[in-house]
Length: 196
Image (cartoon, rainbow, N blue to C red; front, side):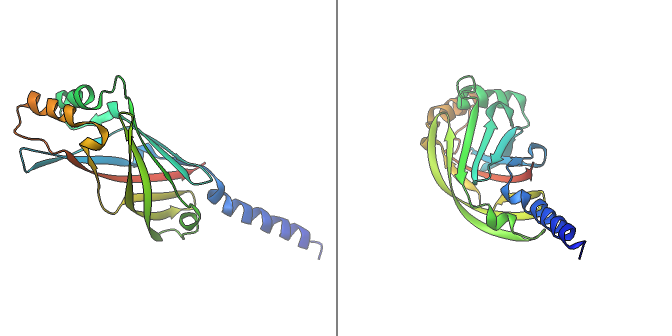
């Protein structure tokens, strides 16, 4: 009987430690995450590009914020990267793009390691100071007690006119001497969040 208070205390402490991740802030692991987009030119020639530097956080209330450093765009061709920065994104005035959402963390943090959950999530995207809402189809996977992964089940298709990017795309088309560049851009993501 003398050990009962101690065992209750240890049990309560263990329960508290196990529930901590559900109540903690979650931070994006930039090294393990990826945000990519597809450009299509000359009618049917498509290429995959990405952004190398992402910052993200989901607070304990489920407010999710992702910030993309637009200077980190990477197409594999340095001169093209610079044209995207200057002619399309205008990174001198608009260094970041942002994605915002509100989600319910509990169904994700309650998953057993390896278990998955499909989520339909309204998100807001901001590029060059303009915002537009989308419905994202996501798959969340609990990796372990401190990490979960979120991936896009279907690409999110952004349209240039929603963010005032038409003139920039036309400038890119002219400088590259192309017949056309698509105004629709599919975007995909793999994001891993870690609790602290």
